[in-house]
Amino acid sequence: MTFEEKSAWAGEYVLGTLSADERRRIEAAMAADAELAAAVRYWEEQLVGLTAAVPSEAPPPELWDRIERATGNATAPLSATSEAGADIVAFRRKVAGWRTATIAATAIAAALAAIIIIRPGLEDEPATGERYVAVVDRGGELPALLVEVNTGNGTVAVVSVAAEPPAGRSHELWYIVEGSDPRSLGLVDTVGAGLELSLDQLGAFSAEEALFAITEEPLGGSPTGQPTSSPIFTGRLVPAPDQNVRDLQ
Amino acid sequence: MDALSQPRLEALVERTAAGDSAAFRALYEASSAKLYGIALRICRDRGLAQDVLQDAFVKVWTRASSYRPEHGRAMTWLASVTRNSAIDAMRKRKDVVLGTDDEGRQLIESLEMPAEGMDPVESGALRTCLEGIEEEHRTCIVLAYCAGYSREELASRFDRPTGTIKTWLHRGLAALRDCLGAP
Image (cartoon, rainbow over all chains, first blue to last red; front, side):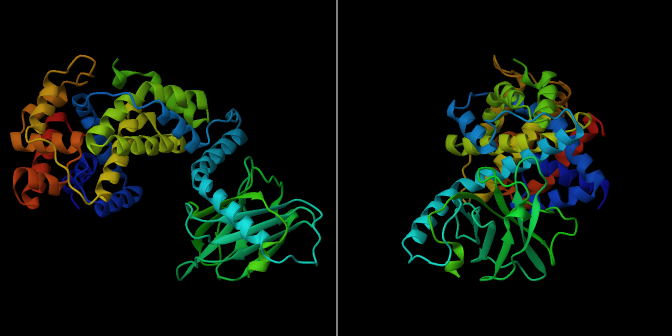
């Protein structure tokens, strides 16, 4: 592609005249083509003066509340004065972005808890501690995974109920709390399969803070030990009544 | 208020990148009216424009650390994030809603004579260079940038094949670049 063609493509991207497919194509190409990325920035900077033709208008006051909720930004920010602090902040921001997807999951988890409670009880596992359940899903769609944490016997049970990864890829489950790196809990590639973990494997456990997330990774799991893509399913824990998710298998 | 030349926007983005929620709020206060105006003109629907602005500010919060002052001003970055969200939202929609026939002329007049309370065209160079290119090319560029017209919508607006519109856009952009100066 000549510089002229690249500049025209970048210019049309900034103008917004390209189709959705072409927009995704140029965004992918920009990551690997510094000249193209510079051409996009050139047009962004040159054309921004055109915004003067558009009158300003104050958005409705409630929009800020929506943004604050969506960013999980109502809490006090962490200090970023140290390098570690900056890492934590960067991580906190990532989590904040994911958090929006988990609101619906809480509702499903509550509904699931209601379903569990009407199933016949089990006798072999007396409840000695707190039990929590999380439905790991995508924006309230069909749950992909159920997670139960039992602080009484120190177990974590994971059952995959839907959503197998595409061929040649793996679904990796992560446990995330603020202030720590995501911790891999293993691969959940097969529907119906489960993971039996101990609570110790979660490291610091906080039912309120815990976020379970599934990312799509290269076959066999993330080569870096950390997620290499954004989560496709997320879920938070809610207190569960008696019974546990293994019964659903 | 000339939001485009507020140097403090850069500082607010920097503090937002460090997780400072008060700075994020201040950034919203300083830029949301301008950005909502931009989104509204592209989306032509208040509900959609509000969704777009929310999406844009969530991206600002999560991606503030990717902003590089050496690559451009904060207002340029904020406008790009907002316009990209708005254009992506519009490209997902099947329906085509065009503005009035003289929308392009009105927008260009707004550039020539900024109404009270609007930002003047900052450099003046852009305005001068726009005046120097062919009228159809200019109208296509302004309608696309300000009002979110796609190639197909411009083709419908001008009753020309999309291939012609693509040629107009490319020629108009090349002439603008010649006039403005390459990077």
